[in-house]
Amino acid sequence: MSAPLPTCPNDLPYARTGAIGLAPMEGVIDSRTRALLTGLGGFDWGVTEFVRVTDTRLPGRVFQRFCPELAHGARTASGVPIHLQLLGSRADMLGENARVAAALGATAVDMNFGCPARTVNRHDGGASLLKTPQRVFEAVDGVSRALAGSGVPVTAKLRLGFDDKTLALECARAAEDGGAARLVVHARTRREGYRPPAHWAWVARIRERAGVPVVVNGDIWTLEAWHSAREVSGCRDVMLGRAALADPWLAARIRHWQYSGETLPATRWSDRVGVLLDYVAQLGGETGPGVVLSLLKQWLSIMSQHDSEAAAHFAHLKRIRDLATFLAALRESREAPQSATP
Image (cartoon, one colour):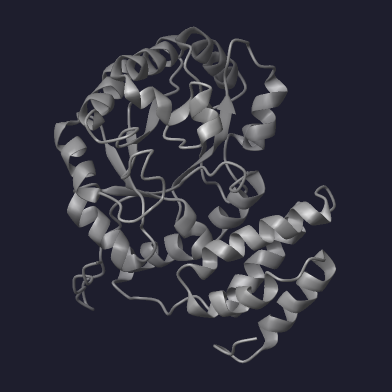
């Protein structure tokens, strides 16, 4: 359970402390979503969906597709830096592809050791490397050596383990020894997936032994949870993933409290609808209506997990199978009295 926020004296605004990152979510948070969410404020950096590296040197267009921000200084339109993420197990090819990314303008390369997807893990990627700390070291070391002298730092995204937490500390140390300048730790194992609770106290154990900054990630759904995650883990910085979709203003809400000590009102349904409609506009005509409808329902499903009003509207909207009808109903719900159910 989240602890209450400490009191902020009205005559002494809080200094800004702690950065907020936007997590990568495969197939969900792409460049359009990054632009939309970072444009709402509060985020200090973001990370792309992973670029899968196997046994080939990928052409530049692959990196540009995953990270179109490379054409703009590796930043979103609102100026938030975006780091390019690699996923793979072959140290030599990870290094070779990291050099390609750097040559295209990547300002940081993140290593994915956290993806829990079975398909990825079966093909020797993501969290599967957490079974063997030496392989984590080799992967990070391969990229660090390839980027030596380039000024492009290497970071790593980890979970607490694959099946259990036995090797959590060793894997974190392996990533650091390999050259990772920062560790982001999702506070669950691969087996635990996204089931609560997130084990922030385990992140504290990693942070206490690490010689580089550690970022806590997992179950930070509210301002109060942000405070609790930092208190328990001892981490200064956090990363938001599903929570940024659940409440697109969460990062800005946290930042506002950091500066002023004031707790902003809960995000209104009408504002959530506005974000969803802006998202459809971002997609334009490049995406088929069936895919757009699926993406909207996926986003609404995440919103509904922590907001009763969104859940009530989603219960009605999820039954609609036609995009035009869905959008009409979504717009109509925006005009409904606040907290009214469909």
